[in-house]
Image (tube, rainbow, N blue to C red; front, side, top):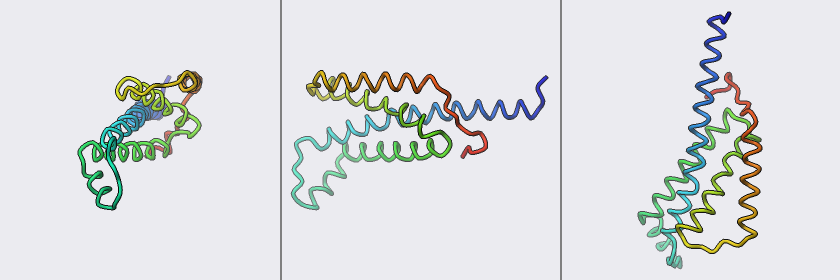
Length: 142
């Protein structure tokens, strides 16, 4: 029979699992989209002076890219505050796969067989790590 303490710990573990999944998704999506936005904003720009950098920072695509990468950084920091590094980094590397797909199909970049092979290796490694437990600590939850 479960005690109230067991139920409370189980509920806390379930909340932590959902929180971890949410932050993993946020980290995985915000980095490739931030990089895409930065790329779109920086294509065909010449940065010869500090004023050119300032103008670039305040252009819509670059500003959005910067905001998304700030979201990525803060989300990753939060995630690493309670989840194992050895779990977080391989799982969030799915962002590299998304980045490669975006580069190919949105930016029309030519991706070599070697790069696709590397991307597939990342997928395989991510799948292996994804089959393990996150080993997050309920007591360390922020």
